[in-house]
Length: 109
View 1 (spheres, rainbow, N blue to C red):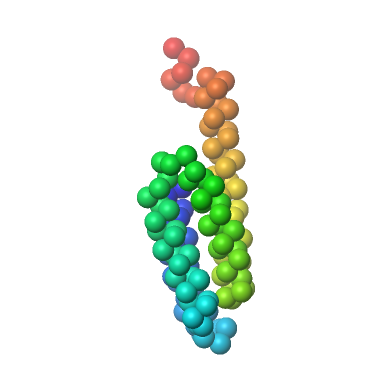
View 2 (cartoon, rainbow, N blue to C red):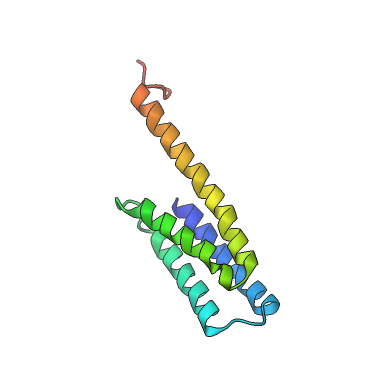
């Protein structure tokens, strides 16, 4: 999950030139929002062992989609990453179920 947050931060930073050129330039609101979002994603990558980390990650994802106001391309990237987070949650649930059922390799000795 930390890796996904770092990738999201990189994508937001790479989206800054798009916002700058295509949406009439960065305002202090859109630039500040995207900058703060990037910093929160990078800081969140180091907090993944906390019990509340998953809720933090999903809240950042909502904030990423809300960046639609800066430029729709940023919002679309947030939606794409929402799909990635959905897949992560699916895999997390699947692994928990397999652990409970003893279906992982090496558990039936």
